[in-house]
Amino acid sequence: MKLFKIVKDNQKSLRIRSTDVSFPLDENTKETLFNMLEYLKLSQDDEFASKNNIRSGVGLAAPQIGINKNMLAMYYYDEKNVLKQYILINPKIVSESVKQAYIPYGEGCLSVDKEHNGYVYRPYKVKVQAYDLLKEKNVEYVFTGFGSMCVQHEIDHLKGILFYDHIDKKDPFKEDPDAIKIQ
Picture 1 (cartoon, rainbow, N blue to C red):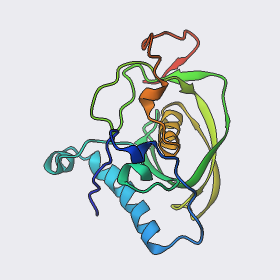
Picture 2: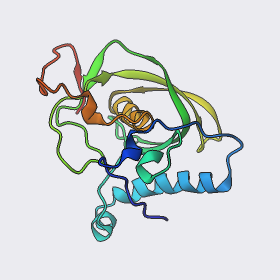
Picture 3: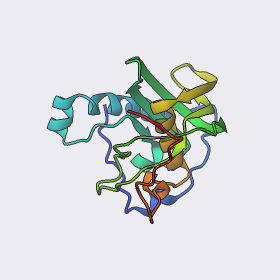
Picture 4: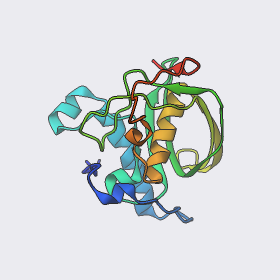
């Protein structure tokens, strides 16, 4: 397993729009993607993370490891404590709910060391089309709740957008009474 050096938000490369991955996939790309997923799994192991001085993460986009290609990995447990893992290539949000949601304690990011307090409002539900390397086929997923927040955060990375770009600068904790709190 390769321990990646995470690109930090002071690097210009994180603000570049990524390009699509071409098919067929080469072995190097596949290996990188499987390593991204493994990195996330191991980052959630407290002992491993502490020993290797890495932070726990649930999502990792290729620009965060210095590759400006449209690919990402996610590894998390949903609201029902069901393990969800994805390796998505060329993901595109094709529809989203009007209903908004946010994480009350804020979003975090492996590329962002400094705290950025405030609410990040995102659609509660999104439909994403992509190629899933774990299933080795084109897929269409509907993400809700935490999964929706996660996939949108990672797709933002592919567009050169960071989570704190969404925080209202004048009123970072502005309440939207209609938005769903994701715990």
